[in-house]
Structure formats: C-alpha cells, structure tokens
View (spheres, rainbow, N blue to C red):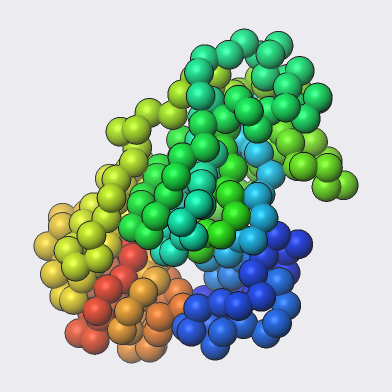
Length: 267
C-alpha cells in the first residue's frame, strides 16, 4: 500500500521544499512523515527532514535499555543527505572522550555544542547512527532518515527552546567517545548500493532495475521511497516523495524506477 504523507511544521523547518513536494506551502515544514492506516504498525519509519536551524542534541537507547523501561525495542537510525548548503554540519559523537560529569555539566551550562564533533556534510553522504550516539542535525540540510519505529528520545540540549530535557536518562546510556567513521559512506547516485546491512534494518539504493544486491535478503516488511522515477507496490503507483510498504520484495515493481531507497527489517 501507499503510506499517507504528513507535513509537520517545525520552528527549524524550511519554507521552500523540493519540487517533489510542490515547493512547499510557505509554512516552515521540518519533517514529512509516512503514516500507516490505523491498525497497522510498521517496524520502520522513514521520513524527510528539512532544516533551517540546528535540531536538539539528543540520544536514543538500544534494544536492551529500551526494554527495561517498557518499550518493544530501541532506536537505531541513519541519515542519507539529499542536499546541503556549503557550511552544513551534522553533530555525531564527541570530538574527544569525556566523562559523564563533564558532559552533563556542559549541557547544563549551555556549552555542550563545543564537545560535539560537527562534521561537514554534502549531498550523497550516508551516516548510520547507532543507539547511544550523541547526535544533532545542523541547519541547511535536507535528508532522509530511516529509523526503528519507536517514540523514545532523550533530549540533552535544545538551544533554549522550551522543551523538556532528559539529562539523567541520556547520561546513563551515552557513548562518551568519538563517532566511528566506519558508519559513514559516500553514496554515488548512479549505482545500486548497500547502505546498511543490518540488523536491525537493511537499507539499499537501487538504480533502475538493478536489484541483485537485495535478491537474497529475507524480510517481512519492505518500504520503498522513490527518489527519481516511480515504482509500484502490488500495482499501486509510488512516486518520488511518496512511500510504499509491503510484506515481500516480490511485491515491488521497479520497471519505471530511476533511483529509489528500499528499507527492510532485519532481526
């Protein structure tokens, strides 16, 4: 089926969106979600993000930590950069190892930005964000985020915005080290590529009908986001800027595909 598209206003969003979203509505749209009908709960969530300001510095727990407090699983995610201004950055990990005390004190004093490793980014960059990684998205970026579908975020710092912080919870799970660049890749836009081999999820860029890298992957949930061209899911047309979901890869028709991201659960 085709998932329902929802535009979400954010104070840090962008007023002008890509053409696949008809250029936007003049409102500050920060996220575009894809929601399933009531009664269907996908294990993965895919969404677009558009930033004009920095997002909060935050962290997510892993499966074990999340289950201890009643959630079905933790939250790992990844970012595929679609566009970025020349000075755009992502915050990933610390610029050097620090103690919990130093990190918490810096958050309280509003100095934690200086401890993050702000990495320059460009179109085609891919970053996997393991649970426990301190992270933030900078301004001037458009990206696709794929994540485990669970609402569990510990906010560490939010630039004075009036939202709840979760310092104690965050400090208990934070990786107090630098980001491992083995989780980064530069994705060419003309080649089918494995972005993430899982678990908990796989993510693939498929160009045209070149789907050999997926052929041996077993999963009960598949989601497709066409970036260029279109696809069909059980006969339902899915265009660029939309998202389709199905139980089997054989349900996806790539005949008219130019370039798509395809995600699947891998447990």
